[in-house]
Image (cartoon, rainbow, N blue to C red; front, side):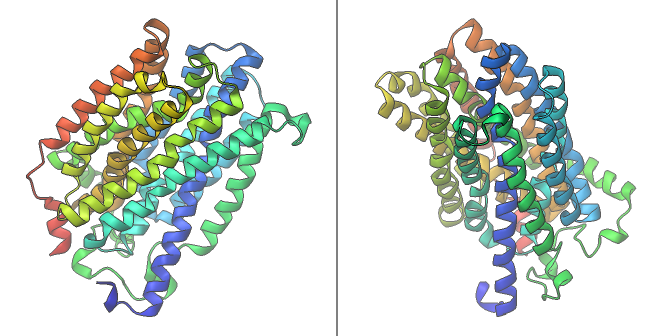
Length: 435
């Protein structure tokens, strides 16, 4: 209960909430700018959808593989180090993407950006796990995981404004889409490094999480945990059925989310003939509505499902299947129908996505270590991110954009069904952390 916390502890936990929220939202300034800039690059250099898919794939490959490493780094060396390093790499890579306009250079630095971006999630989730207890996490993490919902929305609006405002340093042209977001993220990096510590005790604040709830390999223990022990724990975790259920469920959710994050502006320009600026602003509705989805999932989990995450995620994934099935019909109604449809998809997509990668990953951390569990879930789920550019590129080219949404229907239904297999099961990791 929060009533047994001192004023110092309460102040610290909300300071951590605010700064870590800002840090992960900040990553999106150097992530969403690529999707918004792609139509401009395609127009200027004549690159095909497949060539652009290679850029997104390179980014996604390094992002996915980096998750497995970043989780172990956060558990072994502390989240402040691993997250700060990731932020800096993201800044540098985006600066470099604006320096060299060749496709090969864009792919290389997009890969570097993916590696940097992978350093954020596991470490930040671990910091939050040290400040909020299991019974609070559904609601708290619902609000906290709006960082990538709101962050994506603001970053999309910002990148669209920057890339379409020709009066803003006109000599830079499309490079504005990479360099100005890099400046924003550099400032956020400095704020994060200055105000965050790995654990409350590192700032002289008494422990907030009871000793029996602390996950293994906590910051206080990290000096005593060898690399061999970390790897053995990781291997044992890979045999846990619940870990795989959460990870695979998140994978199916992430296929749709990343397809929309990177390709929605291109869909709007190619299929619906929007101008780049209008496409960028309209596509931001996906993240804006996703804010509501994140809160809905978290509150349903804590208030109606006894802090069980998978039943809520399954229901929302089935809702996502229905929303994707309706989309081609609603888009034909005009702009209002399109906006409503994108909003529904955003709500039903972000709800299970934030649950699996937020509160559910923290619950698993009670058994395996938050950094490792979160990194593994995010790493496996990022396979969906790898698949998404080729799924979009192939289906849109061979069968048309509308049929792409029917593919999303199948993926969402299968993902929801996988999570529903654990509908009645109590969260074993949750029980451990709450005992």
